[in-house]
Image 1 (cartoon, rainbow, N blue to C red):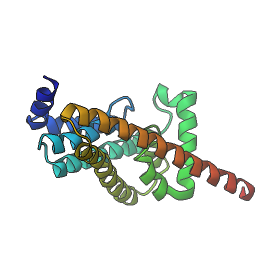
Image 2 (cartoon, rainbow, N blue to C red; image 1 turned 120 degrees about the vertical axis):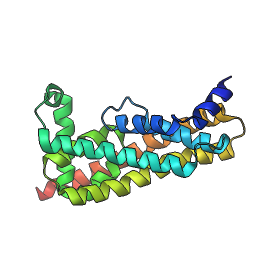
Image 3 (tube, helix red, strand yellow; image 1 turned 90 degrees about the vertical axis):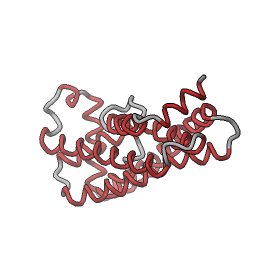
Image 4 (cartoon, rainbow, N blue to C red; image 1 turned 30 degrees about the horizontal axis):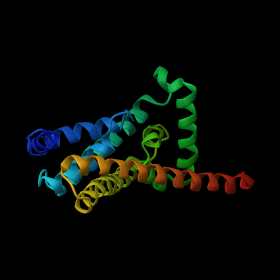
Amino acid sequence: MTEQLLAELAAGPWALPLLFVLVLGDAFLVVVPGEAAVTAFGALSVTTGSPPLAAVIAVAAVAAMAGDVCCFVVGRTVGLERWRWMRTARARSAFAWARARLDRSAGAVVFTARFIPFARLAVNIVAGATRVPAPRYAAIVAVAACAWAAYQALIGAVVARILPGGPAVAVIASIVVAVALGLALDAVLSRVWRRRDTQAEPEA
């Protein structure tokens, strides 16, 4: 039954619109499973034949860019203190963290933040609030969104190709692999950023 439901979902007319909504929502709320959805649809494209892998990557990339740009616009028009959640200690800490890194290397931080759910929102809002040039920001986000979409979808596709079993096994296994890789990437980037912070302190 599960296999049949997954196959029907993948082949249905709402598959790609659902993917778009989940990825777009993930830009604002980290609890929305945007990454998992892209990975799952990447796996389904291999195990069921639909939706096409290229379409999964394209839709995910457009949705990711749209979500990031919306957050940038929020930062540009609203700032960092308009809403109550922005004034919480956790939000202020995240904004300060993002500002410090954007001041040093805006392009690299905007690109890498696309791959880290908890950093993505703060970086995009602060980029807007600190007046990072919009054309430069849009170009970086476009490249990052395409790279992120391809990365997430291909994880699902590769796992589904290698692992024996039907769509359900492929989807679950690919999501587990994607989460593990995401945590590893987060740890590596956090270590790199901490090292740069330490190296920059004597210069201050």
